[in-house]
Image (tube, rainbow, N blue to C red; front, side, top):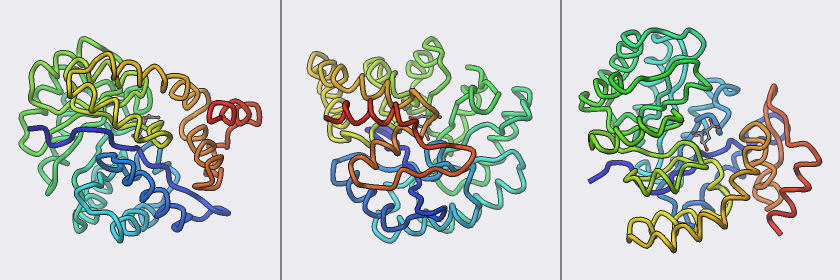
Length: 284
Ligand SMILES: O=C(O)C1=N[C@H](C(=O)O)C[C@H](O)C1
């Protein structure tokens, strides 16, 4: 049985005049969970964690925990200073979260053995399951297959959010059966599920979340024709969601739906007016 499966939404952090918009956060989380998603990933890339202080990240998590069961929340844990990351991990683990989503340290580009040591230290300190976040285009570090296989031996490392962009690696990990493989690239969700991945962590699933859930359920029920039809309907939206840097398009879509304000923290910027026009037409 997988530990992590189904559609997890990589949650945006709503802002209002520069501050975290907690009422919007609660409204949005309720909306998504009612649509049937498996859970929410808090303070990941889409949550603009890099632009939030540690205190703000914990405030976001605490606000969600007031209304969302901890088993439906995964917390992002990113950084490039191990002592600081471990201190944050200690704070997060005082809360009842389902797991931690952990990328490689950014900018410093360690060797594979350095990466083994990094993830090993976090896994050794983990009180909850760890999801490896393989996203070389953001961190600058590629997790090689043998490194992932070695990490998969750790009892706390149970899953991967796969943004590696290498289908052979994805297929090998699925075939190994040691990690739950979650699509981390929204355009790859259908393919990953068909190959035997257990689910996805997706920013675009903020919009029409029930359709993403239905697609995953159709795959699980071996109805590939039905699942493909749903995915094809979602594809224009998924493409538009990444036309400008994530999460700007998703935030614009949510703002068009009246769920949050269309506001990001610098250096991220709201979608261009031309894109907002396209997004409005797509929503219909
Ligand atoms: O925040 C995330 O987790 C996601 N990150 C990807 C990104 O790096 O932009 C996109 C994915 O949909 C969710």
